[in-house]
Image (cartoon, rainbow, N blue to C red; front, top):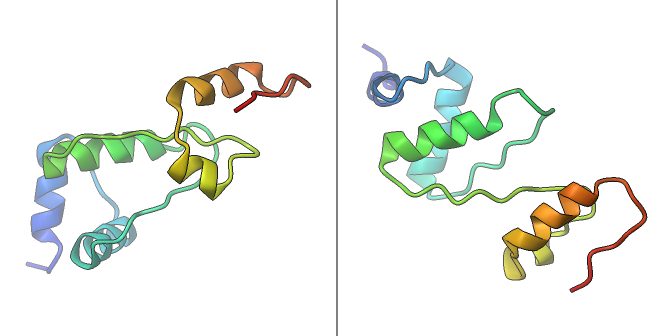
Length: 99
């Protein structure tokens, strides 16, 4: 039995099969109380991982939808979900979303 068997069992209980490298990352962020920042192309499973983590740890999922041009100050200190959705819907048009 390896040191990640409890973690794997926790994720399997919520219907998510976790790969060993990802298990190491999740174990580290939970022990060190640090955020896990995930990036990747659309459809690779970032949101599903977040949902599985929330279910496995019994936490509320707070989703931050990122888009091009979103900087750390806006994301962390001026988080506005409606404005994020509007910016995503506007997409690549020349219309800007005001503060």
